[in-house]
Image (cartoon, rainbow, N blue to C red; front, side):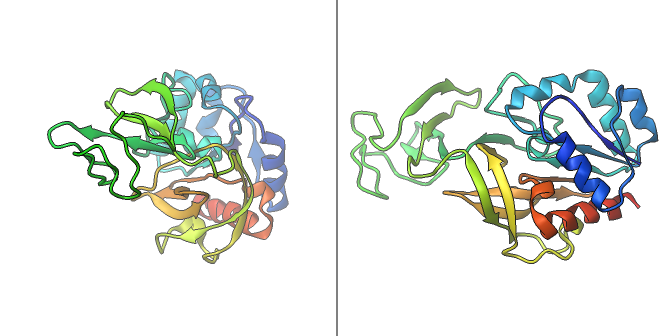
Length: 255
């Protein structure tokens, strides 16, 4: 039995239909205690990261208990982002924290200035003389003329800037998967370049858990897997044969 978590964040019905198509036995638990019998757990979701606030301590405890027992967990779209430590979309809402890193908005960059020598440690640009040596922008007045500050200060001291106005956000439509890590079971039978369907504005960072990446103005993790915990940023229920194959691969983890 697969437990499909309903926290009022979209796409539940379409995911349930896709799972029925591949013969999965699915239940939508009404209380966290009902997860005890689940052989696997899927957390779907679309929309704002703040919606995951509904996954409160009892739900988190029940989901973590299943993971600790070795039962597979799959996050879809917002559900994948929830697997991480949190998201800049709702800084006060923690994620499940099974994967390291924070999610962030597409089309943004992080600058973490080192005041000892004026070098930006995140992208290597030397700003000691106020000039960006990568493209010749004069930043002596402290303003990036291609970027717009979003007005938020973060605990790590970084400043987030609007990076590329040419990138269409939200990212909606078909895009390709580039296989990053061979042997990730969630991607068995999926060829690099396979097209899947996205609709999102926030993304997860590319870390060692990234099994596939996608490019939309920048590279982001589109499939992650660490052991029996996996996530996909796209919607497998809307991604044709490739999406159904990924759902079947999850069922194989459950078997």
